[in-house]
Amino acid sequence: MSLVLDTQQIDEFQRIFNLFDASGNGRLTKREIQDALEVLGGQIAADDAQNLLGRVEAEGSIGVDAFVEWMAGRKDFDISADLRWIFDLIDADGSGTISRDEFARLAHCLSKGKTAAEIDAAVAKIDRDGNGVVNFAEFASSPSWWTDFGITLASLRAFKKILAQYAKVANIEAIGLVEVDSELGAGTRGASMGIAAMKTAALRKQAARQTADNGILSMDPLRVQTENHALFKKQAFRYAKYIDKLEQVLGRTADLVAETLTRGAFPVVLGGDHSTAAGTIAGIKKAFPDRRIGVVWIDAHADIHSPYTTPSGNMHGMPVAIASSTDNMAKRINDPSEETIAFWERCKALGVPGPNIRLDDLVYVSVRDTESPEDYLIETLGIPNFKTADVRNFGPLAIAEKCLAKLQGVDLIYVTFDVDSMDSAISMGTGTPVPNGLTVAEARIINQTLCNDARVCCWEMCEINPVLDTLNTMAETSLGIFETVVDAISSRFAAKAAG
Image (cartoon, rainbow, N blue to C red):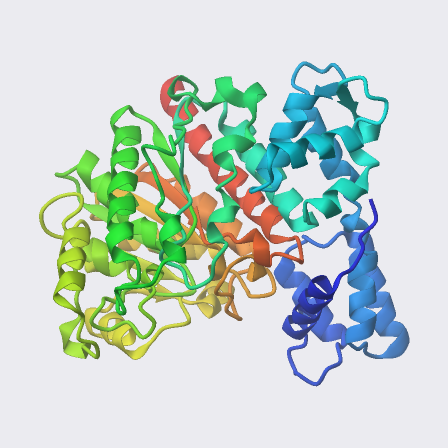
């Protein structure tokens, strides 16, 4: 299936060009391209990378038109391999075909809001011989229905990532996969799409894998209602947007994480936006009220605002403050309403009475986009922040070891990985990309090394937004880091069982 560019895709390619264009002069040099490719950590196919470098070597530099042309012609935009992977996973019995019902469920997962009649029409369009089943040739050679359903390469690869995550943990009893697809705390809609399809994407053939017995804690949408519908209503809380609904989501998240830990599994949490990390920490504390919890916060942002200090009111900037019961009144700039304060106090009370974590048990990695109230806390409390420059100077392995050494006095460690901790050339698949971040390799090594430590009891990854991921590296990158972490955790439990 060839890539047909529309205006939106061209705009996205131009945005990527601007990320590569460090000098901002509208031309890409060989050095700028080499730097960008290094940051991407091999996510661009070698042939495609060489093709781009060859263009700039021939011309000295290239402009945006040549870059867009290169993007459109990249070999890794050939989605036949992705289609084959998805088809084979749906075709669990290996018959070489998928039924009309199976295909209808796939179409529904990839394009929400379509009616049964629209889905039936799409299935009929692909089932060209009308025999009631779809073979791979029909599946891969009918691009028109993709256009009808507005399916993009980014959404397809995000869907592949979701299925791959389920397949990865399906037979690992030690791991509980916990999905929290809330996007209430984010300023950019679409974060929940990174994992929302997980509720249905495993399809009927995957149903047996979604049980607690097999190590996956599926989230019943009735039990774990995300309240994302509130995003379409008028906002009543200026300094803590949607806090009334988010307080419910945090409570449900805490319950799920606590349940996972109580049954002896390791919760791997996939969050829509970072606000729900406060619920994850509350769940750890709920399960282990007498344990001292350390936190490694890998993120471009400190997320330690409160309703009293926030410049935006977005609650994805507040989870550390919630978990540590920090108001930061010394830097107060806002006057939240009594109702806002009441909900804020209820959020802080989740888990156990009092703070769930101490700020002297917090370590930041790659935090680089902060406001003055956050800087005040980091400086006055001496919260360590291993910046990207430190990672380059000491190496990612040494930085992870420094984090663990700083937390030597804690009983348990929670690691949270926001994809925007990586450089903006990688993390376009998040609502808040920030330059000068981690490379893919650095992020993988840091997360893997941390999760090798026996005290790490929970790992979370959040802020994946495939709506923004036209470069199509975010889904593959996040999946690679996810699989590395899962392997580290699995190895830990296997060694423990063997010993």
